Length: 129
Image 1 (cartoon, rainbow, N blue to C red):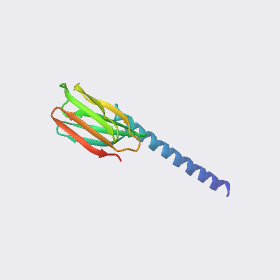
Image 2 (tube, rainbow, N blue to C red):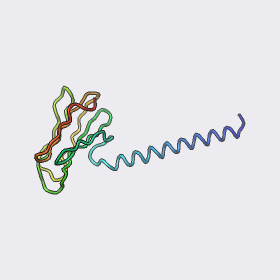
Image 3 (cartoon, helix red, strand yellow):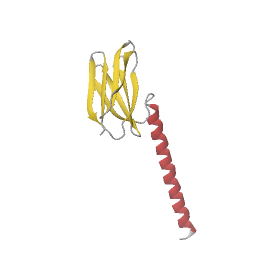
Image 4 (cartoon, rainbow, N blue to C red):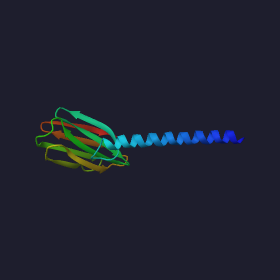
């Protein structure tokens, strides 16, 4: 190969590396900016009449946070995460903004998410298997 071909391949390789680095940087920045409570990527949002629960996953850990539809007034909220064959990890009480985060190591097991805000609730069944 002549020196021109080597330079072109080197330039192409550097351009690909720069583009991959830029995509990784912008992708990680936008994913980190959204969830302030749980690390990892958002895998589910489970809506229900009085709120929603967001589910995140990272390296075998599952994290869930419940948010009410109408924020401000303190109300009864709860969130729980249970790995198949294990006990649930729960956070419940009277909160104004969110219940949780609740984090559990599930490994490769299925998990069940339950959440409630006031009289509304949701149960996911076994998911993320």
